[in-house]
Length: 92
Image (cartoon, rainbow, N blue to C red):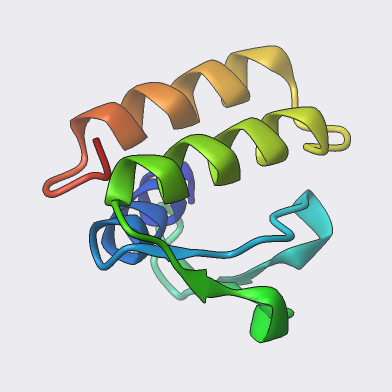
């Protein structure tokens, strides 16, 4: 699930889109038949906006998610950041 979320965020940021309100409650996860897989989507995109550069969108969204990650354990947060850093085409 964390790999799917990291890839989704990387694609969004690469396209210079910033969610603008990226809280844990805005991440929708649906389990798949594959025990290791999940579908991930972002909710409440009405505050999303285009940024001049991908790095600004990335920096703000990831900082906001870090502050408002709810009950996400520290180990999962570190893993998400590592997967995001390795995601193809991530926002720099």
